[in-house]
Length: 303
Ligand SMILES: [Zn+2]
Ligand SMILES: [Zn+2]
Image (cartoon, rainbow, N blue to C red; front, side):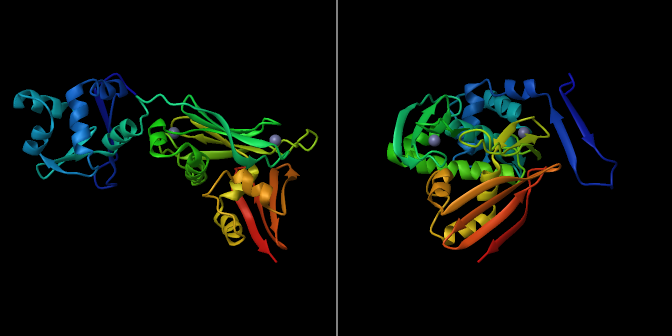
């Protein structure tokens, strides 16, 4: 981004209706460095989508001087606040700021001490442990150490009992994975590209699962998922699981794998790399292939 205060880019008139104005990030974030401006965003964000007139907004914010108030409102106008027909409302970025404040992203410090919750490791049958620290959930096997770790907003924690957290975090993880599989960056909503980085290593004990990397084209954020995880959250696989009594919204999906009659992940071809994932239960199978670009193809159910 340039050093100017703002820059705009748009195509020739008449060619397209897309008109994007960009501002320097430092300037934009500098405008958040004021109690009054944060109060303006919070007033408009309660509930999000709320439209308020100048007078209503002025009354909602603790400030004595309307001239001073107008100055602060003006500072966030066009970036975090929009004006429509003499009414003010939050922009998408404004909603994100208020959402992050509500999620406790900036203020909350929370930890949940490591504890077993009744889950079993799909690799070795060991006990699964739940832990929350540094704003990340960790679910891992006490015996072999296999597991996963993902960010979870600290502001969510007080809403739930400790015993609920493994299932709550499983639902959160499912949402996170689905967003990535739909190729939206969890941070910036930019497009994500996918790439299988290695196949199943059957020589290691327990076998090391395949791994795919999803990278955001815009911000560079990376998310790593195994081939079996990519398959699990595909609609046909989820339907198969659901019809056999396994709901991926109720607990860690590795528990579902352990409960199935058979879960296999094998390297199907090495060049180009592709991974075959098969779930079998009650005489029925579902199969899919994770390709080089981490997409799942040729998904099929067989009785
Ligand atoms: Zn284990
Ligand atoms: Zn991104």
